[in-house]
Image (tube, rainbow, N blue to C red; front, side, top):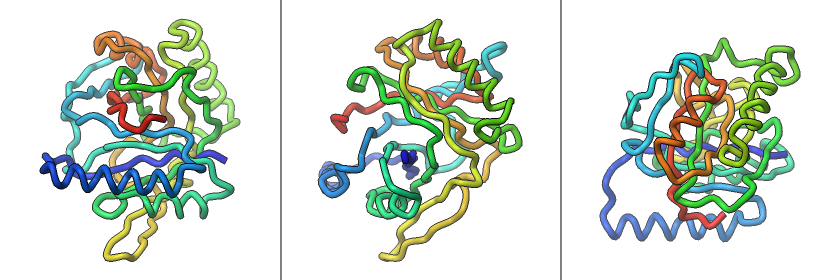
Length: 232
């Protein structure tokens, strides 16, 4: 089964020493968990991203930084694991868990990107109010899936790959403090919207990426450019 791990941390300017230590920590994690890592990358700063609200019929674009808290999404992984316990074991070793948090979501089905992702690619995180999240297989969920299929026909490989997520009741937030693993049911943020899925946008032009994200059937889309540092 596939799991989506969304990394949450505070954004701040790192010293060269801190940057080198952080890179070394992630390289160590990759070496340990490489057999389970299907996809992943760091995200460029939220100041370079956008948030698109209002849905495809009346999109409203807000330039980043747009977070109301000090901690924001800073990266992601897709793991292949036998079960949730195994996915949580992987998440506890992610460096972000030690000074931030890692949200772990079961994936309904994962479609890999058709080509290697680079810093010209974007992660479109699809957000919905908690009460608007549908259970996979229900008529409402199938209707939303059909809307995504229609979008794929229009934009083709410019927005290919990604995954719908199971409802927020299935999510687990992982933190590690002083060597102790803290698990909390549900997503990290207690805001009005939660992750409902993600898609990749594979274009270099920022305006085109925003245009494609604005067409996605979601209440809100958080559009973040990939850092292109993982090589996955």
